[in-house]
Amino acid sequence: MAAASNLADGKRDFRSGVQAFQQGDLAQARALLESARRKGIQSLSLSYNLGVVYYKLAEYGRSRQAFSLLIGTKQSPLAHYNLGLIALAEDDSATARHHFNLVASNSAQPKLSKLAYAQLEKLGNTQPRPKSWQAFLSLSAGYEDNLGLFPDTAATTLEDGFIESIGAASGYAYQAGKNAIKWKTQFYTRNYFEENDFNTHLLRLGTAWNRQVGRNKISLGLEGDQLWLADQSREQRARLVAGWITPTCSTTSLSARCQIKLEAEQIFADKARFEAYQGQHYRLDTRYRAKHGDWSGEVQYRFDFNDRKDREIGDQFFSVSPMMHTLGFRLSYVITRAFTVGTDASFRQSDYTQAHRFNNGKTKKRSDQRVAYHLNARYQFDQTFAVTTKLGRLSNESNIDRYQYDRETVTLGVNIRL
Image (cartoon, rainbow, N blue to C red; front, side, top):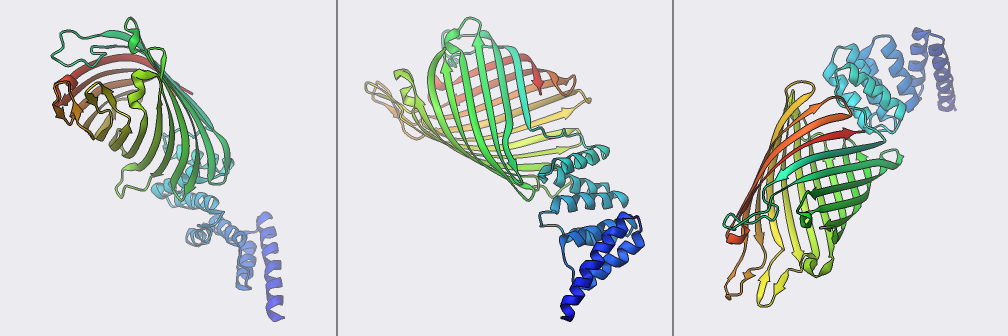
């Protein structure tokens, strides 16, 4: 009976403490809320109210201790926001930025996220607020000097100018707590001025379930592609994608994140000329991205395994099922707030699982080494509009002469981001 009476008194003190706070009597509010805690009241609401009272009284250590009790509960975003305010009051901008970033990236409460982004902007955060939907469009003109990927020993090559377009749009069909369903659509086209047999069009549709796990994000999705070549359907692809992203992969002062993605897809090829490409394709994609000051970079490793039907022509056999290892990097530097320059390069080793068989009866397993690199620049007029240019070269070495080739490309375009 005494314990029940004590608990009842504690609840009464808690209600009176909240009322005293609302009336502006911080000293009385503190005394009553602490009394409620001593009498056995233990609740998230009491911890939150004590944290607010201590903060108002500039007792930041006690306030931090009270809000920390909410970490790991459904009130974590609110706790982190207030811990950020405490850090600001103590002139600890790095800790404040950490807490506000957690709220901005993890909170399912739009108003709280908005407040966190407002604090980040005051601290000099340059990242735009996330949108429930976004769209991107790129239009460019360019020139390519080896459309058919002919070897250097070929008597002639095909070269032509082209118009290229890339578009993407994505948005959230559903959001609740730490779960979301995201959709996306993408397209790519390249149309040559004269060599229409090399025109390429791609349409991609996809949806994915995303979930926040602490500061990490996991996703599982389905995608479908339709690819056209020379204005005729070449193949369709159905793909299962799983991914994991974490911003905690760096122990240094770098702003960095890591990503791992797994893909498995079935390819359905059209027409007899593309039948050899029907089959399965599997991919592991890992990336490390980092930013430091005006520099940003990315390192990527990708592994691809193909199990295609392959091509037989009479007594000849040609494998189109390579196993590939690709290592690449990107690096960019912000010269001014509007002007950025960069470069990227990659090396790809391709080993074909079955030996080619030629009409002279000889066989050889194909092995290629491809090196590609680009120089690029971007001038950003505002958050929506930018002009870009890119110079690129690709060189493929192979132990089979017919697959050795070089290609150079130059493009100039505009980007529109909504």
